[in-house]
Length: 139
Ligand code: DQA
Image (cartoon, rainbow, N blue to C red; front, side):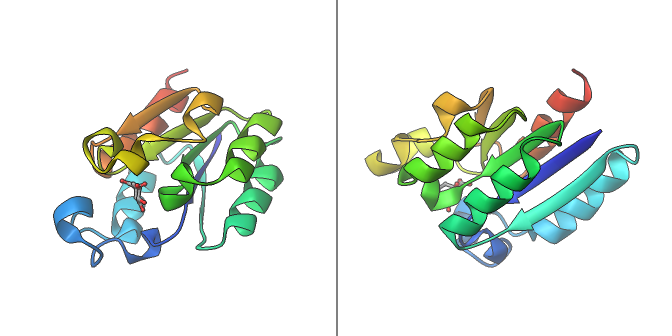
């Protein structure tokens, strides 16, 4: 089984960025732990601060992977292109947010991705990515 995790802008700064909202753990540390729990899964990780690079990666993986877990970060709320890319591919996508986007500023309540995804996990910290992996794993 092949699962990809795609992170959008500023998520390369997890562990130092607004730790009261996003926590103190780096994504790399979390990801190493996640991979060790699922040795049979082939994981791919991609992070970019550039919208078009995220679209390219969704298209590149979206016809061969079993699942994509995406946190489009701020592009969630602005990117029609990322929403369209998810609608265009065959691989099912789960949208994950570390914080609860429905409990923050109003502009974060709009997602161009949710309606194109099989499900959304928001507000459960990095554990949200692990829960999404477990969903694909147990399908
Ligand atoms: C985020 C929530 C977004 O609103 C924000 O722009 C992010 C991270 C989250 O994981 O909670 O960068 O996607």
